[in-house]
Length: 469
Image (tube, rainbow, N blue to C red; front, side, top):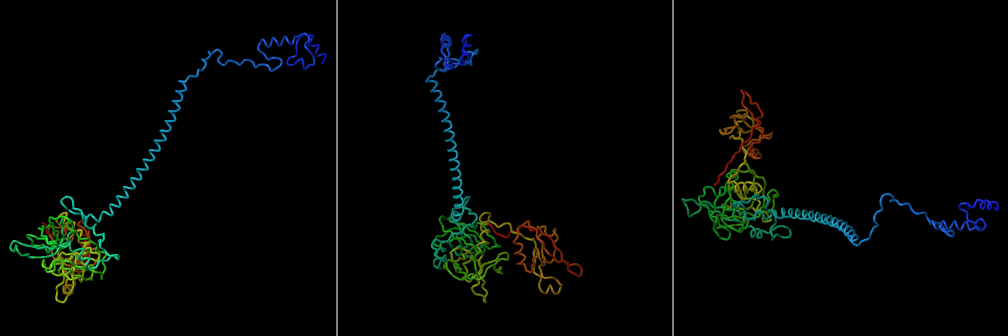
């Protein structure tokens, strides 16, 4: 250690990083103190504390130093406005998004509400369709949509008594008086009618108004109206009249396909004419789908009833136990050996015809073969060895049936594979189709000494049997 000190003293330097106090010596020559003062003058640390850090390198050396930042209140306000605007913008976007979601929800709920109301109005409003005055000249359409509601005074079990039925229906029944010029003061015919609409459409039978030159309609309250024929149809035996009236009480139309044999039936009409206006008789439904006789047509089926039907009741209503019209009285069998055998046109069959008469004054769209036939008798079949069927007696000259293969004296035995032995059967089958439809007829044709059967396809034509005014 002493030797190291002497080496240090000899060259006058102090070993770097070594303090004299650590060497256990002193600084007799004051060299260290002088050195430290020199260091201090140059900005170094004192010997008693850590040395100061060297000055930091100037990163802007050679680039020009920027001006020092000065904090100003205007800069603060500008920054604040920018921050506030951004915040408000985001808040506005969130508000718009929430508003859009709310509006979409309101729209969806509105659509659901209006749809529900429309559906309810469609189903619940049908009941009033026949009650509303018709537009476009007072023509009601789709009468088949009425008749689904029940009378207000219906009992808890759904069935009305006969007095209740009479009270409910009688204001909707009228008497129809027919006059001509040769006998202007006395009716040549009398019948009944059913009020269909508030503004005066009335249905009756064609045979009631046939030949009429003037018509008087008498309401249940005694009021007389002048009636005019809107349209009439001989084949269905239906006619529609119109009177100038308002606030009449339309009859409630029911459905005839739901009828059952044995249930109550009430007929209301002017039995014997105006003197016994709106007579009421009761009975039952004694038969359904009855084929017409010599009194009624061949192409329709009828309701049979035991309710008493008298002259003057034609055109009046046949009513069910709910006071709904299910049939239009048309005839009765008056042969001596028959009793209480009356017929009515089913309302389901009548409504489409009524609608056509109101809209067009006639019935169109009925199909026909364009031929006249008669049934092969037993004697003809035995003598000529003919099959049972219908022999063609005439072909209408204004049809193309002849060019389609049919000829006089051909015997028709089937239509679309179904046997036909009577004119009525053939008429009913043809009535199932519309004009323009092709049907297949099985025909037996005389050839030398035997009858050969062949199938001929025939296009049905349109046929109209009507009177219109």
